[in-house]
Image (cartoon, rainbow, N blue to C red; front, side, top):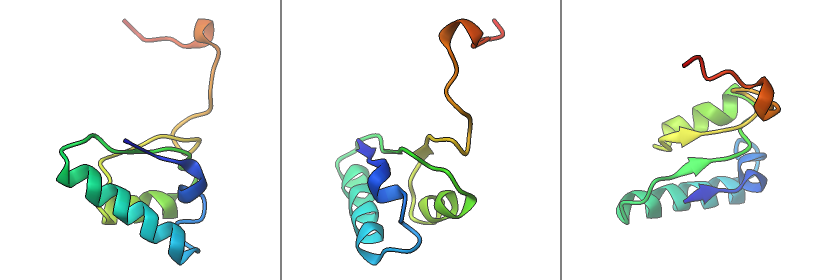
Length: 75
């Protein structure tokens, strides 16, 4: 289950977005679904997600998109 970046974007400043994110995390956990937050761009967003039990996140905080031929798997 993905938490859309439109909710993650303002999760630390908008009470409604924070409530939606918490609800999705809660539902995912209780239905044994994997949950990932997309669009994480700041340490504050990541901290909020971690404090609320979101197990995975993706976004520019971790890395910018790259072309497949430029991506080295190091295998």
